Image 1 (spheres, rainbow, N blue to C red):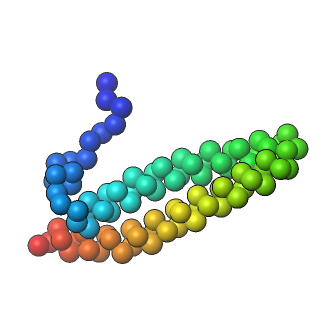
Image 2: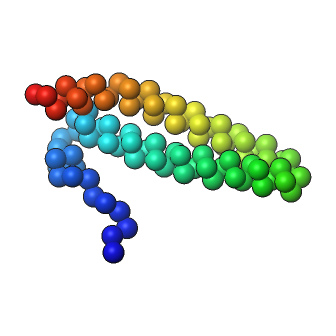
Amino acid sequence: MRLHTPLPLHISGAPARPLRDAALVGGGKRAEHYEIAAYTTLVAMANALDRRDAADRLQEILSQEIATDKKLDGLAKQLLPLANRDAED
């Protein structure tokens, strides 16, 4: 049983290029989305338990995760056209 799927050889064996970087950004976005889901749930739980101190701190972390996801969006928007151009060469 595999715990993960390896990247195709043409990505993992390639020198750092826009396609590889775009794949790494995609993996980072996946991780951020899991973290956003987790912190969203934790904020709701802390609020339900009337733990305002915990909810406030968790909300700060959630905001950081959302900001990181947006930064990754910006990187993806820059890398994908470059990756497409490399694929055409």
